[in-house]
Length: 564
Image (cartoon, rainbow, N blue to C red; front, side, top):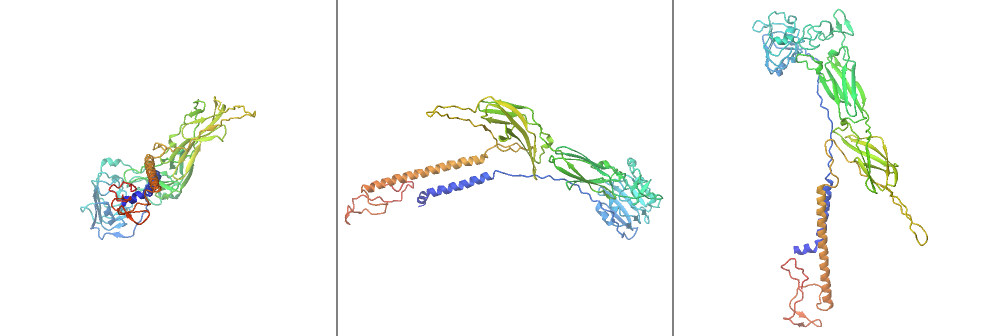
């Protein structure tokens, strides 16, 4: 019975199958487009300048006791204490990298030992140490003991007699490091630069640690005290092109040697944070980043640049500079070729203009196309390649006007840069507009005129610096799916036509049999071999009569049930 119903409803089944296939093909085609976006980010450095925080407490209960420190984290025992009522023993090998954790300490009641700490390069962290009381002595002899620190400099640059009254100190340092200098305004120092001086040769700022050779505001001539302030006179110099900016910054401040860092902002976002590392031998301002090149900008756009300089005494006022980038105008092309192909086509080609490399940056999409008009602006068009064809032009002179257009697509907006129209004159050597006169019985004339047409290409093709433009037309998968769809549709229509033909033939056969009075029934039925007369109810030829056509379940499912 399953076969019977399938055949009987074959046309419904085929319609459902075609509908399903159509929907599937639609989904395949719509899934061919993929959109991606890119975003430009700045990598920033972080710098935290924390003011000196000094607590009022003491660490340690007796000078005879000792704080042993073998790595940086163990400085937490004493880092917050201005007074250490014990001794300090530092033996760090390569696990102690700096003494900066001791910058809060002003007094040690016991002794101080620094040995076998090979990652320590200077004495920064001890600049606030005013006294070592030596109430306990190392090896019962030394108030200060420094030895076997292979990279440690400035040991010989400190006047230790100002820190301890005990003449028994032991200083062992590498001779080659004896040549590392102090800042030229320092009288003794714990490290490089103007902020680690033990005392000053000329002027001293109010913090009593920072030295200067000049002073714009002397507070006390007796003590050579100078008023301090943050940096000022920050300046910016720059060079622009179409999509790049070269920026140079710095300060002409009289206290320029105090500047230890800069922070730079692009359009309100922190882009660069650069500071001097004074944990080694030199306070090297050349290590400060003072130039930058900003790329991938849109020609003709406005760029906001801001900068602030830093010293120990704070940040300068924020200097803001608004920079206008050069507007880009595509250059003209000079070579144009015009060729009469035949009596209907004229081909025009030109050499594309030269584009600057910097204009075609990778994070944006760039389209290049050409606008033109022939004779009048009403006959206009656009081409994506450097050639076009004109058809069926009238005989005589013509003017073709062509200009270059560059489109830059950014995540935020689209920008267009137009060149100037360039006019070129040429002649059409063939007459394509003509009049002919045909005699008629009424002595009238008929005029035939050929209409002028211009080839108008489609929309510009997207071109990027990182990909090759793809081929036009449908995707290959969609094309194959369409071929399969129309093949199945043809087969389905053929089957339906064949079924209609066979049904019509069988209907005509049954109708003819009925008209000739061969059978007297409309449909096949199940019945016995008994045959009844048409004139009476008498049963005749009970055993010898032919069977009426009877529907039997055929062994062959494909056998038509109308077969007699």
